[in-house]
Length: 276
Image (cartoon, one colour):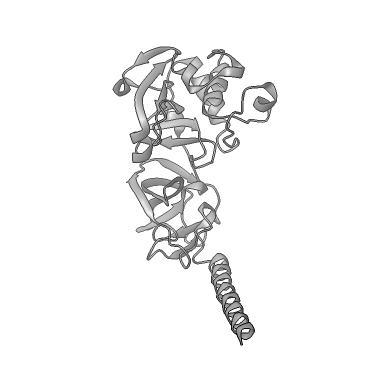
């Protein structure tokens, strides 16, 4: 009798696991509920949660005409898949209005834009900035440093400890501080030793500037939620945008982010250094 009872319990557990697996597979391959490339978490299993929303008034370009569009950030309650950019006859040149980041991950964001008298939401990982050239300044060395960094957007994943030898540089393996050093080295500016650059060495470079007076090309620093002071560094571009290398950028590495995002702004610690 005990043997049969154990067998019954085992079969019951296997049935529950099989049902859960079926629900997950169904959610995974249901085309109207897939939150796009941003996350594999599905509304049927674990709903996506918005943890911060903010203004995102930037000129953007959707990378492909087959990118999916939604009525709200995908996977959130009430969100519906409404087709692709192509099927909705939407121009890939869009102007963002609002952004919502999901699940306490700044890289998992959706951006709202309006066309054809309708508001759509698109994955932040499926757009790129356009017209960044309008922020250009008149300092050739700063522009050379920024251009060197922009060329790596989406082409260099964050690599803690990377970027401190010629092999890493050749293979575009950087962390935040080695990336900043690389950018300025391409403009003929040396920010300390290649093999020992850190945020703590960069914070001593150039001269101090007040945060409210920050301008294009300035380095500014962040202290993270764990209390680590000067744990991250970025290059300011203008219009609240900055260039940096971080695992929580939209690209998972070298990318462009905004200080409009409460998370980034709250971690910016006010320390700014002007190099040129």
